Length: 400
Image (cartoon, rainbow, N blue to C red):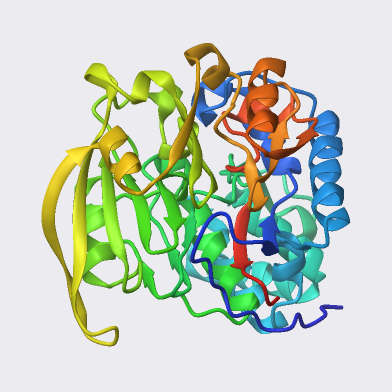
């Protein structure tokens, strides 16, 4: 039986504010299918699903031990009104009938599916959202009785990277916006995210529409300004929509245009991380030379209730950070490949990092006053993302 979760008011003004509510999604059967063909799922390497689940559960326990409320996507969905959950499950199932079936048989097949959905428990309905089964029906020429009159072929279209809840959403000072993932195989995650928000009583402030693409790993809120990456997986149209719909709030928006556009640094959070209002870490190759991003600065014009963003200037990334009084701890490309940038900041200068990061990088962070928590994540890194990718902070600030 579903249990109603209390409504949330999402708000994230700055990455360094204390994390209060974090959304996760433990990998389950949908990830198993991704592991069978990593080159089709945008994974780096296969891993033990059991090991990955243990790592994810440890990640959750670490957050909870720090006093942070954790909500798993499945927990939110199970708590949704049953009729909504049934409707979502039906939308997730593709029922196809062979030409050998007449209209009466097709209608009967649809009725059987609806009766099955009515009979299923909420937990099973949620799994249908992640697995997205496709059922192909044909007449069985060797039927023995009504229970064998059809032959069925089943396949799944799973949400491959569902445990990376960062990308299908962004949480700003105004609330949550649903992105539009560039990779077609991941776009179902946007729909799942929308269902999760509805189950939590959260109305999204916008949903990015194609041809716009925007992914959560490219967004970092910084108090009086935000960093919005634009490059391989977030395009100009996706950013334009968020500007037009005032998704970021009444703040300066710095669009960080990535000249490199390569999967090994696919998002802003793969080569840059905020650690406090005046401290950050960045891959050294991004601070000068051909790989340094150009920053396009937009300012809100008007009142906090009625404004538009106006492009005012462009400058280099390192210069922009310097203007903001941000000291940068550099790390090497080798450290970047070990996910140095992809930790989860849970408070000012308090950072959760994958345990695989180099000891040298951890020492440099600690020398700058950053408290670090190393979290085992070796298996889950195979999905091509770290702790930041695997979490969505819904509420930050001094008050839960």
